[in-house]
Amino acid sequence: MKIAGMIMAAAAALSIVGTSALAQHTRTGMITRIDRISGTITIRDMPDGTTGANTGAATEEFKVQDGARLNAVHAGDRVTFAVSDTAGTKTITKLDKADAVTKIDKNEKK
Image (cartoon, rainbow, N blue to C red; front, side, top):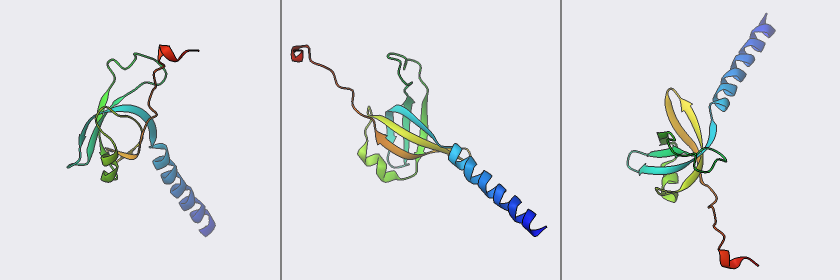
């Protein structure tokens, strides 16, 4: 009986860990507002791959787990971020600037 109880406890612990890992989603978006005092950031979702598809994209406000990360970004920056939903609060756990899109100058063609 003790072994069965230990197995059930281990399974329950793994399901909790698995649930929190699945709760994180990596997303891409553009920062529209930063509130460094309250530690929140507003990001407009950017759909993957489709040019011009960002019209009508959802804008959401998130808490930032580490407020120091806000010093490296500004409104208008494209970012990739991971969100964890804990007790109904969406919190950014990872925030990185996305690679800039470069334009090719027509004069540079050879």
